[in-house]
Image 1 (tube, one colour):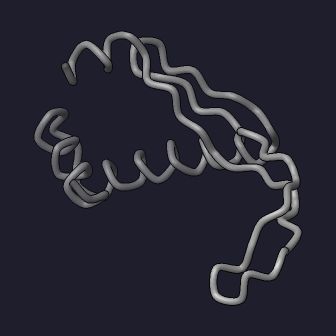
Image 2 (cartoon, rainbow, N blue to C red):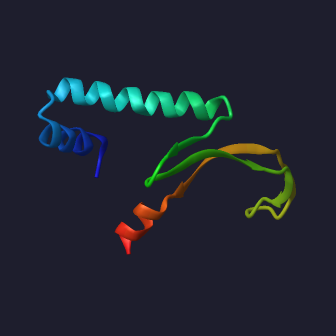
Length: 90
């Protein structure tokens, strides 16, 4: 399912215009991005939780040359599904 498919589903479910549905979806995604970029967490009860995960710096190997390289610490978005979502997927 693509973003466009989600917008179409919102149009069918709510009767909103395609333009309004697209703007609403973009606003939600922008807000999630903004909160996560500040290190925050978003909990949608029953659906799941978006948070920022931290990865420690570590040593790695270049698979082509075998040379050891330093991989810097980084952050990445994480999602933990809620109980209702887990039950729906079973």
